[in-house]
Length: 257
Image (cartoon, rainbow, N blue to C red; front, side):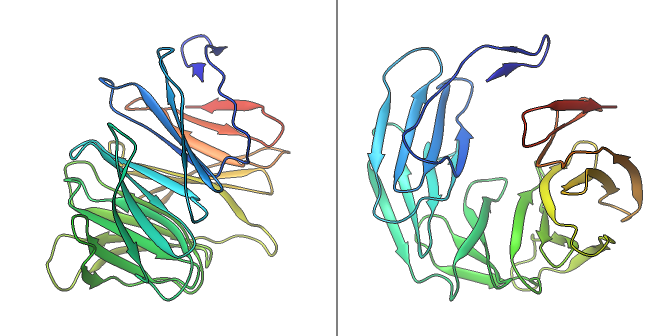
């Protein structure tokens, strides 16, 4: 964990397995949840107790639901809801999709969860009972990232087919695609990092050729392109500031205005 004001490392957490994903809880509880293959690790950021929760499926992603004080984990074939206060499983949903789960997110009220799969399925489910609610327009291939708007019903899906879609998830039955953004990359260029800022209405992609691309999610217009020698394996907008950080696999982080 780094202090963004002076770039000093303030905390380091260690796990015994490869880290697949993580989520932070609200400011009040100050905990970090890390998915690491067969286990979920819970770290107290103020030096409190450390907790390891054993899973039965590869827990490759984790999402915190601050509205219901619970967190959602996704594995190869199942989705689980955990009580964030005691670490116990509350619900377990199997067989929701035909293919492996590749990413997921929550709606702005924490009442629905959206799943993307390796085959491009995009499905919406009820958070409380796992009931299927609707199918959204998917992608031709793996969905690599999903992001839901804050105080809106916009859903951004990014696919390995080099397509970005902006959906209006609000309608009960049919949720239209408002904007489709084709990502024009050269052959063998892969998308490694991604982030969406609903405050600035931008989506960013980092690639293995060192490029960083930023689009307007309302118009689909390409706003900026930055080029570096090293790949951009992780990108992140810095809160409400007009800044974006991009990191490479060697640990070098650059901040762009």
